[in-house]
Image 1 (spheres, helix red, strand yellow):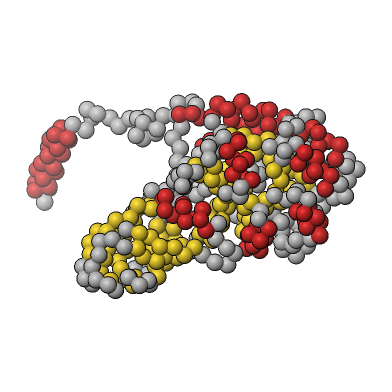
Image 2 (cartoon, rainbow, N blue to C red):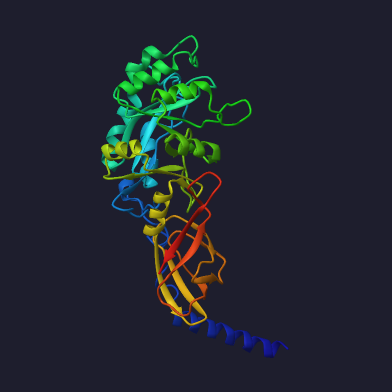
Length: 397
């Protein structure tokens, strides 16, 4: 046994040496510092690779990604104002508003004197915003006891002019809320009601007499249909009935780190131009869509514009029995689609989830024979034009 084993072992060693020499395994050692293994960071936020939410232009409007409600250490947040700008830049946002509580300051940073200058967080963040191309809107949050609630004022010219309306002995005192918002309105502010169900005793949204009074005085111009990841159908109904601009905002207090393929709650603004003036005109004209958790809430025409601008459709084949249609999603939005029957087609593919950046195909049974051009009826279940309903439209090919 020994005599047979030794020559066999020797042969295996020789073959292994020759194989190793043939592969030249030591001539090019692996270097884990190559850009492929570990992409080099250039030390500047400007040169980082980013993956923002892609949106189409809609009928001549630029669809701007905006977040009009967030906090820093200058009220009850935990990050520096510059961080808010950098987060927005990394996520590809076009505009943000840092809206510190008018009545409450430095709750997490007692050494930050935010009450001395109510414009300070804007002044700190402004230079970084200009360098990164993020539109920074000066704002504040007026914070009063329920049922009054919280209101954001955007396009504040000077926050210090609102200091006289702070009751330092009872900072949540709602008795002068109307006067506070009127003073903000006199500065040209756009005012909207935040998270209407927040701190309600039953966790519900309720339109109280104080809100009707503010609305009649033109002091409620918009409302948060979604705040963070909470959507309230009743609030969307109010917005439709009362002609209020719809908002969805993050209301971030801590630092932000979004998972791949996820996006913060934001307000999509259909602006004539990418500027502060363009945003203000769009807010006044109620051209917004509230976006949260891949659901979109807004007027039918705006939602249909997003569908039309996002999807590229072509016929792959058509026989007398069926037509196969390819749908390419050019945007970052996702579409939860249910196909329905119309006079020309009955769907063989009943439903599809068309993720942002992906392409899929659907099969239609022909009612009127073969055709390489037509349109089929769909419901888009995550597009909500009215509370309790979904967008019904047709896709042409």
